[in-house]
Amino acid sequence: MRKLVIALLLGSLLLVGCSSPSVIEPTEVEVVMEGNIYATPVDYPTTEKASVGFSPGKFTIGNFASGREADLPITLHNGGDKACTIAVAYRNPDFVGEGYVVAPKEAENWLVIPEFLLELKPKEKRETILTLDMPRDAEAIDNWEFWVSIKDASQTGMVQTEGCVRVFVNMLNE
Amino acid sequence: MKRKLLLSFTLALVLMLSLAIPVLAATSDEVTVTATPSYISISNLPATFDFATVDESGTPNTTTGWFTITNDSTVDIVVSIGCDGWAGTTPWTYGAAGADTGQLKASDNDGVYDVTVPNGSSAALHTTSTPGTNVLWELQLDCPTTFSHGAEQTTTVTVSAAAS
Image 1 (spheres, rainbow over the protein chains, first blue to last red):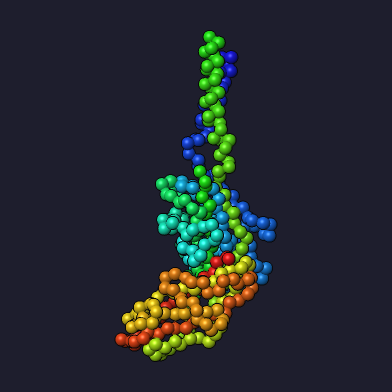
Image 2: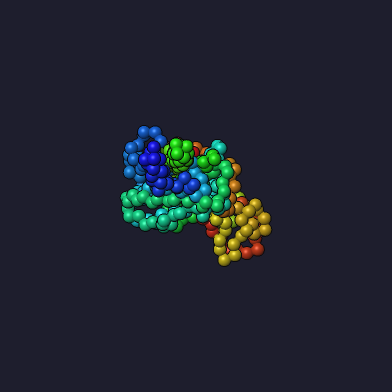
């Protein structure tokens, strides 16, 4: 009986070393693709296009909360015959999906963009991974949406184009 | 002696379970990221339009369908439009026509000019463009009612695409 008690105590000590139940740390997140249309996170039209593009167009983050972070891998594509500079920036949405509100003002500070300007060679595809890192003392009650602006910064004309990644953030209900 | 052993065993069991249960429950709260397969890409031509010399209270415009947005996206998109206000040596104020105040309006290939192009934000220009369907659109300038100067005015118009 004494040996059993000692064994249980040792087992408890091992579990203490393996976990920190008072803090739920974000785990390594694998980006999952909806549906089975394309096998990889990057899908491109079968015909080569001459413009600047990116994939995917939407992300949905689940179980998000203060103190957590989520990686958003975006693949940029320069389909033109000349090098270009692509600007990546946080953007407020022009509209939101049903059940979502516009992101809190502070959310712009929660998005970590590793490179705001990326130079791509002709026909080059490159991945950039943004991270949404919500501080522990931040608050967001409703599910919210923000956008990421992807723009060819080489444009000089009066009319310019921009693409936007939509990111839906679903907060963990505690 | 037996009572002490039983008490020790019970305490150890409670301690072990209190530590084990959160570990076993942690996986249901993990952050998930799901990406929707989609490629977004648009381009626009021509890249400019010169309204040239304008009159007070005038409403010069491009022809209907003057601009073409080529939609190379693989999913339905929504197209928005915005601008960054007026620039020049003596810029107008951006807004409804007034003294040295003017704005742009747009429409999607019907010549109605029912979309006021906002300054610093965006308004919906075309609600749904399916993959491979281009968007034709046009611009109109609501000139100031009075000019106090003749300085050239410029602006940058941005058309944006997002998955619908």
